Length: 280
Image (cartoon, rainbow, N blue to C red):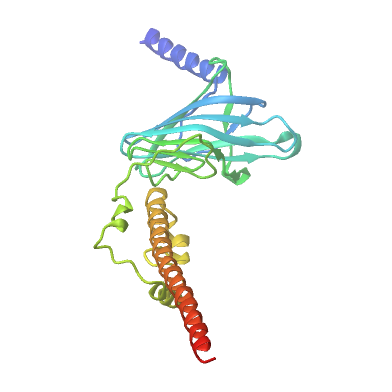
């Protein structure tokens, strides 16, 4: 019995020594942990909870005066529930440190999280529990977010509402958009009812925008679908071509009538000359 007790004590002592030597795990959810190591780190964090897994790669800057910055380089959630990491800082000036805690989102509870430095897996972050009253929350910047459960990716946002959601500018050499609606070649079919310019003018006067185009309010509320909008613009361009063709036909008719008028005018002048000659 004595040997068994001694063995258990030795195991507990070893566990405590290892824990003190490498404090990279936050064992308690909803508890703030201070990162006692200072510097610039690229860190992998694995967190778990009730039917939830949460993996992030983050860049921590905690070396400059009054600096505590956290940037998410990538974020991945899988399984059908969610937990998340919350961030903050404690202290000021050269004694400012980054703090972190794990909380449930849609999971009923959160378990724990583990830090691992990307360049040095043996690095010790020195996580220690800190009182919540000493914490000032911060919002980390986000670069890439993967919502595996809904099959969505967010860049610059953690709330993607489409397969790919980008909060910011996109620079690309080419963008190809598959069409979900027919191309507007129907404008050139004989049965297409092209509004007259008078009808279009009346519509604009009443509604404040072109027919079959969203209003400014609709743009503000719903944004713009690139593929659909390009087709609507093409429709308007094709209608303009038809207006131009119609106007060209009217101009030809007017020119033809003008030529007829000139011919008739010359005939009248010649007849007047003959009449004057006969009256002499």
